[in-house]
Length: 401
Image (cartoon, rainbow, N blue to C red; front, side, top):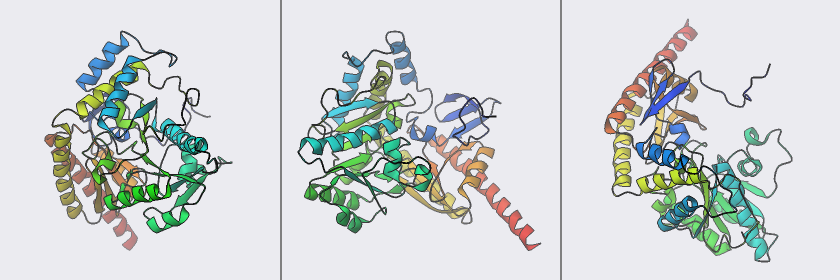
């Protein structure tokens, strides 16, 4: 018999009832160190006092009003994002998946209005993840994502991650845009080198096509800058944002230059809940916190300390871990052991990590992670790795016998 909740997730047998900072509390009283942050969502940790205050205050005044009317909280958040990024304009969604849908529409509409309606193709890369909507799964193109869901939305060209020569050859007079994550999250914490991002920007400029960045997972301070592409010194034409921008409240956005957004006029897109007062009030508080003096410098300091300690962990457990990869507080441990065994051992030692492709476990802690939390993370990850080593040794002994 099918459960009342559609069984589309492989859920761990854990039930969290409270969160505080970097910690989650299980219904049985156990205290877990959260190095997943709801998959890079709880950027300021759980129950951040400012977010709680802002949400409570807004909830007492106005939850929802239609986008048929002006929404001051929405306008304030848009102004903040325009002030601190490349963007000239913002559309608010409720998730990264919704942001992908608009980014695809925006790119295609741009060329339609430029009397180039044949330019509809969007180039993407293997290992990418852009959500589970029709556009999102077509953009990723992997069998795991698309099997059984045909016919797929057409117009996507899939290339090997990092193949810049292939990219140049793939661009035709039907190409509208290139869509890429500066750091692949679901794909296994695979950063695009700064030099490649710069080359990608130049290729798009030379070919007259748009660059769309998916910063849903790597954005909002996670790499030590507000957005990851800033490290390369480039700007996109369109950018998808979600996860951390709401600090745990459902919120997403598409940021764009005036030129790239020029085709999106009244009636071309909409959202019932997108940009609601509750979500945008929280989003304003998140951006204000992340852009406060010293915050990103602290993220970089914590990230440096965490990386240093994690390198020692990798060296101490060569049968479990292969390498550390990533940037800022978006880190991945490439495993030699099965990554799900490491995740499960983490649960056994009350530390939460997140699996990814390429046999990686992701470490996406709150940006407010303390030095003490880092020390506790290493202690618990070390115990988890030791548990995996012991299991591997036991299996090897059984095989010999």
